[in-house]
Amino acid sequence: MLRLLFWIAVIAAAVWFWRKFKGPAAVPKSPAELEAAPMVRCAHCGVHLPRDRALSLQQQWYCSQAHLEQGPGTRDR
Image (cartoon, rainbow, N blue to C red; front, top):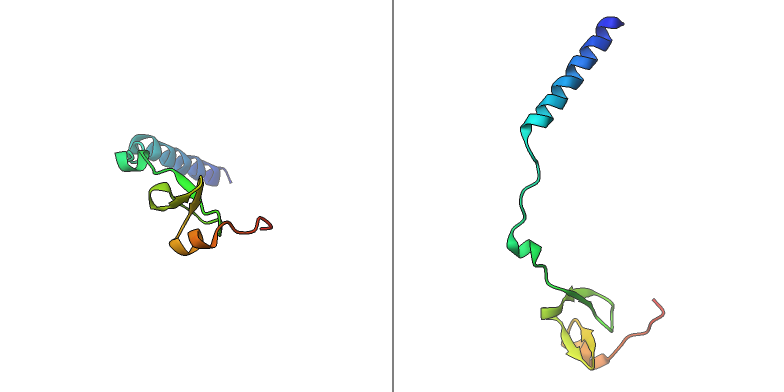
């Protein structure tokens, strides 16, 4: 039993040292990822999309020309 505990401790220490000296696993993010586009919600269907791809009418955003023409959807969702 003592031998088993010894090997568990040795393996745990080895894993700890390996993780410590391996270095940071996080990759630095690119500038494009740091400057994400603001998202807006379609007033008709509720889907979220980048503001630069959305259509605007009277301070409301729409995901497509068809939804812009149909107007705001119902709020019972």
